[in-house]
Length: 363
Image 1 (cartoon, rainbow, N blue to C red):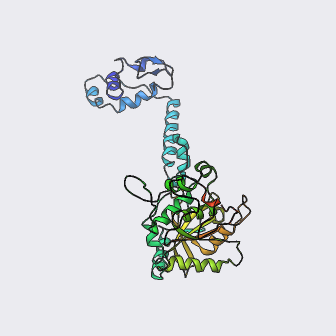
Image 2: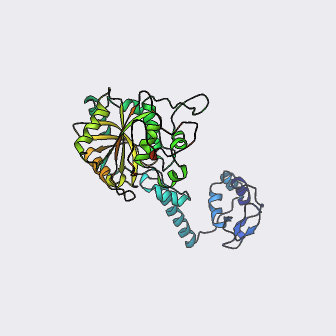
Image 3: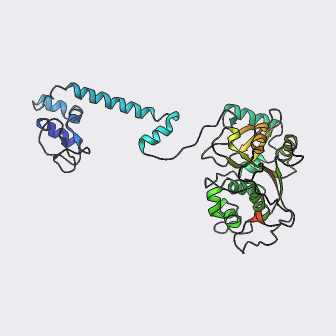
């Protein structure tokens, strides 16, 4: 009977011999049809389970062909208990709080997203939706939100938050790139901006700076006003004025890109770029249009917390971070020494017809 059971449960079919007569601890190889001592084969202890689940068990019992399994030893019961415990542990790893343990247990490497800290409010949470509705009623979405949201994208490389954010901003301003993306279509993408204005190897290893990002925006048909949190006369109040103009005044046609330190928000990482999509004047919160959505989703953040994150000093440059407002240039400007046919260059290192960028690099 056991041999017939094995034919039902194991492929390829096994020799028609009862394995219960074999020495304890030996294994049945399901590929070579022989006994061996490898860990990849079927332990004789598992044959009890195979026999119990055999579809012909009842018919064989009535026909007298059923073989009564031997009495299970204490060690066998202990082994099964350990297996049940192990299976329960694996099931528990599927919970959201154990995602990293699950990755280790299954051999997968890497990180799947991160939870937002308590310093911010998730955009898609109950509180986040409430803030959105209130900001809408207070006019905090009338400026840049709708254009940014319909051009929202996720950065395609871990270190390209700057070009990813800028591509979304330029498309939201309806600026024509003046060169093809794919097929017959002209459209700003992260890769298109990188080829135009950045050293790809440097970008991959250390990211970009606020100066270079402002230069790339200028190179691609935008007017830029760059502000550092440490600039003379720049305060949180002037920052709020810029916020209101970009997010609440539809006639301004301006977009804001902030360069901030994630650590000040109790997030992992350091320097990061994102655009500001909305402003809640009563709660004094800004909506961060997070382009690193593989890590964090969009969130609401206190204006004071964001200001502190921009005030943080970058140890590489010794200067604070900051923000820039981007507006469509009429007519679109061009770098003094650059045409789109001349190949890549670092826009942050040259002068422009309407703007001379600071020489110090801001990450």
